[in-house]
Length: 260
Image 1 (cartoon, rainbow, N blue to C red):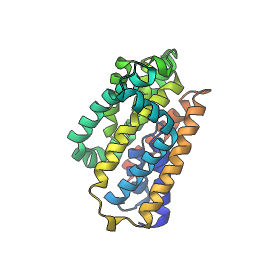
Image 2: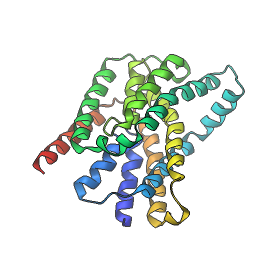
Image 3: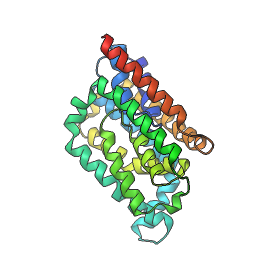
């Protein structure tokens, strides 16, 4: 892999992991459209490690309080939220473990991805425009945590989007747009960490090269900026720009698939 490809895929991961457009879909589609070979396990690890750094760097203060209050069983908002996040992570972790092989093979079909980009974009639009915006982060309970966590399990299929499906579920549960995004990012931390650490055990120190370092750095910086952008953006606007993007991207993929 050359450095240009490493930078492009690092940007794709940093944007797609946190914006509701599906990073896994774009990491399949960009090489498919450009005719690039599979980047390999080592670079996959680099991208996951980069976005893990991004979410930890952005929310480290929150996590210090969440972990401290949660482990001490304090009946604070943060103490309860910690356990809601832990319980919400379990469905996604189980599905990821059970369907890991399918995620790396049959789920990576470009036609399936293109169709799912459109379908999930439509669902996000319908839910976002018809749901109430009444619940803040301190009002998230076990029911919301579990429902959003269960939805996260569907993100193993490229095109669904982990952030997209969890934000959709959050809006369905009455969370404000900004709260849906914030909870989605907090919920992503354990599962992104688990995925990154699991793959990291399969990489030897000798596999780490310049492309790996560039991938980590680019995905971390772009991921951090993506989180900041989306939280600010959703305070004033809807998800419509991402819905339109998903529709157009999915349409392009379907057309190219049949032309080829």
